[in-house]
Image 1 (cartoon, rainbow, N blue to C red):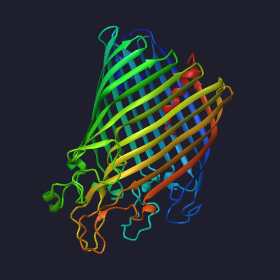
Image 2: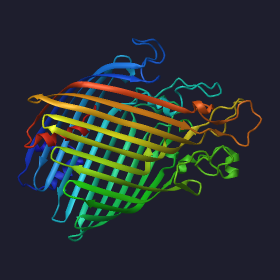
Image 3: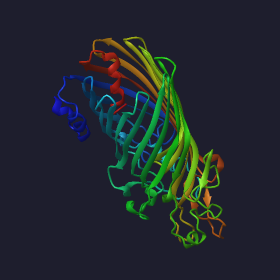
Length: 513
């Protein structure tokens, strides 16, 4: 069994250092099946082009899903490793393009190298398909202005793979001082040709590499840290298709420097506050193809704009530094609680994040939390809520002018996003390893793309501008809402001594969460 646990390179590296000391091996397994019903606004379900089994554009859908997850654990006083594999299939009645298999891989491990040094690692990968919200992100849903270009292409139903890996070294310099250093990698790749993506969508493949360092000191219940983070992001939007190759698009850079304070109120409550400055450089948003842009030393077709940020609704609390770079206040405040049969976590965060759906770095403001409560061991109540405000400048496609002459194919466009992600569920263990569960999920998104006209306007029938979001202010917000209710059964088997606590690890490893 040990050879099976050392399947990956990272696993083998950590296992190899674990010595021959005695270890305990455990197994967790879960089979889950459910039926779901969903309601959503126009454009989320159906075929979109013919009547299908439920009509061309129904406001509802039903279906079912099945998934199986297995996890192997090896743990001792010096190390702990977990390898989980998950496979699932989901089928919608009204939306055949979203019927798909999915796969998930999840590894986590930690090893104590000495009394002062510990190394931790993680690797994840998953395969899934894009849903219909991508059309909303490009301003395609609800479009009614005849001046905007039309496109029947959609990324909905296309397979993609997400993967990530990280390793962190923690070393105690003394009884009170310690440092942390880590590397992490994250990627999203389209399992197919990029030519199949709409040229007006900012979706595309992404790869990021991040290095982090923190020096901290502890005083009784207090801990102070000075964190430093730097990230390199390669973002290739489909708006660059037939314009620039992936190797020609310049990478984006962002970094964070600040200070953090952590305070343990008691054994159950932990409060953490981190604040500082985030800086981002995005030269890939400044693509100059028109001689007028080169001569004017500007990035946008809007002559009033010098750099990559537009002059309408830029991100709040952010300042431009030159043409490509921006500086903002960033950080996070969180409060966590862990008790015998309950836990919760509340957090407020702000910072730059690479966004494969924007083809750029998005400045996110996040307010969220999650909880788990067991009034008795057989019953579990759980839920999560996240409110998000995002501001980004994306490499938008320029619409074709009336005379057909198009030199500047892409130009920066400010976009504002509001999102709500929420889930609430209950589980009841009614017989042995068999449990029943019911779970509701809410998703809501609104996105606005600012108009970027060529300025000063030339005497054209339709002035050139970046696109797809309607001109009419009352229609400029593109909305997407969806509610899905799941009801099903779950069978769990394990060899753990404290299975009721450890079994929650499977929730993060499922291919169909």
